[in-house]
Length: 273
Image (cartoon, rainbow, N blue to C red; front, side, top):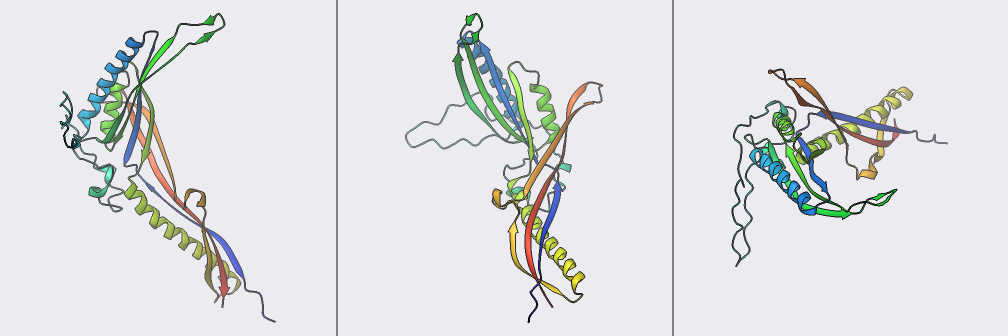
């Protein structure tokens, strides 16, 4: 009577850490007033200021071709202006330069511009009548515009936040850190293979404890992150703190922690001798 074949089920994991390549800053410009025109004008003025500061830090956007029979859009003062005083951050690219060539990244990293890409949503308006215990209050009006800018230059981001952080009607809603899609895909492939190799080694260790000459043959491998389409988990973290600059003034300093990319697999093996 043949003995039942031994089965071994194990999990395999692998993770790597990379310094963030990009930071997305989300900004809202909003004003609430009992006068609709004043609210809109206040947001329009503050939004123009934020847009101007971003354009100074971003490469000029290429104009879109006008449809046949239509004139191209008129030039507006300040459009396409770029600041040449930004310096290149050499350290930010050190960890990932083996993963992908920067020339194929999106968003692209232009050495002379801290901002890789940006967008602005048009000004929206809303109105409501607030309720109070004494009855309905005066009608309120709000105007709002939102911006998103992607920075690849940490010092440029810090200077930008210092510049707009105290501007009236301007709020920094969120700051998130990430890798480029190309770097993330390159890392993901490597850590998936390493996670499987980790599972194989675990199974072989268990089999060798039972029979020194035993070998393991995989019969099933399942991704532990099936709910996310099998994509490795990206865990970005960031911290911000105030520091003293050379002149003794306090300024905001961002110190992003490494992004952890992790893959997990479940594997089943049979033992052969």
